[in-house]
Image (cartoon, rainbow, N blue to C red):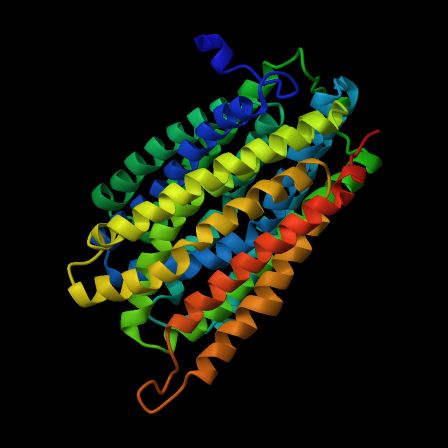
Length: 459
């Protein structure tokens, strides 16, 4: 593959499935690592140059911001599925109408969110009992991010379109450019100009806006694949409804999972500072350990979308087997590495031996669960790519809301004793392992049932 082909859209309806999936997943994996570093650098800079309260403000604001982004995550997932299916079916007109409608709907959503930001931020922060010492910083940080949310929204949408067309490399390159810009501006705004939390937020929206513009310029060069004229920017009713049907379940899933995490975090806080610190360490390691699963899941979505669009269901099933096997193999290796060398990773976050041991104890509970998540992400990716976004949504709701949260609180209450007045802290992580395992079983059964084969957006 030459340099020019590397940046060309990938036709995943031809060639060896597992090779196509791996080549498509690798750029997304690198991109996920870059995004993880993106947020890590933000925290390091603001913590070092401003102080602990500023770090707390950024950390407290992030869940709220992520919750507000679920709408655009939903649109991104929906348009990615539609683009991949229309691209696979070689339906240029439908592809063009879909992209044009998506661009306008994103603009409308952005304006509505920006208009409500000024009035909603403070009440939301007060509702969540944000400490008075950091609430002003939280408000400033969120206000700037929401005023510039257009850049973040359009990067997610445009990169979703590029991936749907089979081009995961360009989205990666533009993300890496944004990461470098963000790091440089973080240091300049915060360390040199002393802008504090506002500087971090400003650096983020500038970097995201640059990446969005780069994605748009790349898309405008793909005239052989679709057209983008002013007329096509008028939302098409059918395509808009289809976009909502496909995208909203994914957005709702993210929102529900975010709320569930907040509920479990409240339980974690009741165990005291040691477990809170251990949970932070475990979740940071978890963030990197999960990356291959999410990358393969997204690759399977595009693979399934293009092949369903082309009517190649036998190839979809072949790719699902090969892709899932690869994902499970990678997760197995990661699990073994964590179990063998995990304590070395823990020492990167703290020098306290007791905290490292506590973190490692909890990580040993979770580690095997990554194999289960590999199955869930891969087969859910296939179902989403085929147009069935409802099944993965319901499985996520059941495993998170009905199983994980009640189980965490239930096990904690059941294990309370004189020695453990708050209950066993392992309960929190056992509940997560159980929910992951049941989620994998439910996803496998749903995939085998085959209902997803009837959900294609075009016949």
